[in-house]
Image 1 (cartoon, each protein chain N blue to C red):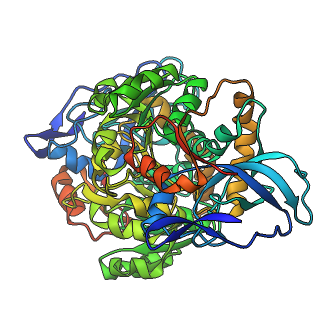
Image 2 (image 1 turned 180 degrees about the horizontal axis):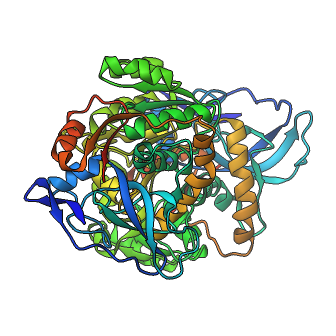
Length: 315
Length: 315
């Protein structure tokens, strides 16, 4: 098979042996694989692959068709359309997916959309509901709202009955965010629209001070992204946190063990896929690149100011 | 009645009109009132009384005897021994306590112990269980463990089946902490005893960096105290937080509205008082002062290096 391989800080296409599915595993012919910030960090040598994932093939999510199944597989058969979050290895013509982390692709999604769905919607769902217990009627701020997790978070919060304020620096993307249900604003105006019960922080450290000042009593701040070049260190004022009785969450999905990814996948299957099937959620795709255009795809991702996902179409 | 009054940064004893209980309220003859860090901050003009509390009479907790009841009181009668967390006003000969925040004083507690019980055990219980979901078999670090909340936290975590590491600077207090069930250590050794599933931080900002480095995967840090003079600002590294999928909580009890104090009091009544009655929990008292010795009591509190509570015995 051909695969994207990280070599000396660059992404190149190489031939690799076809993987073989073990017990409970699917061999998937990959049709689409979304890009994520973790891929760029991995390419830069800052974020090694987690245990069990291929060391040098990036890619945290894919959509494809089951080509073969290992022993004991019960949930899928050859020919099924599946999508999944992986620890790595998705940016290749073939990939191994444990059936417990695989999701069926709803009819309503194209394979390109499905390739950009799993990571963003799983991360956003986990952050908003599992971590922050977002409730109807609450007000949420999504900082850096135009990326994959951002557009997923805006839509999930909107269907959940929250009032959604979405900040994005690129003014030309605000109309599209408004179309997804948000009050789309310039990042400089976030404090003026607060206070917020929940803040989904996708930019990182530079926003932390304003975030803490803008939290409502009992507010929850969840830090999911650290913007490229934004830095990870920030000063916090514990008195601000205490007086608001606030909570700070932070998490990554990539490093979680299989069983935790499976738990998150089951929640998405039960709580998010029905909304996708009902076409109440969309997967905005900014641009699609072919496998051999992977370098241009990474460059487009790094350039930012995009609405939704950058996806590699494979095969 | 006589009351402790904050006047120009000092505490003095003044005559004040006897308060009158309203609907659902108890008039309590105060017999003991524990001191808390918030009293010292209020005396310094840094922490104004919350809405509904007397503006210039400090005191967040008391034990006493019901002297009269307002209309509609159902839970207590004249002569009952009660204890409670208040927003303020406890350091006086008489105080008003809403019956929903009052707790019965178990037979096993003296009134001095009862005066030092409510704030510390409610805060510690709320932090460990309501916020951090401490579970049996987990390892917890209590930083600054010898104070009122510290000794409550050490004991509550111990009876809940956790492995408790307790740090305190004053080496002569470590034996007593070990007697309460903890592995008592020097603060310099906290990282070596980790990682910790839960950290109860009672010192504040200076420990934040080591706390984040010492958290286990899925760890919860709860910041309750900001040590006198310790400062509230600290730098945090979001990557540390994300890679540990950690959570930071922070809270105050004093500023919560009546209904939230009542919810916390009901939890303490159901989950903590039975353990007090069974003598599985103790209320260590460092020193007792008379009402007219209030200035010396505050000075003793500010000096630190004490095991448990400083209590004013009144009347």
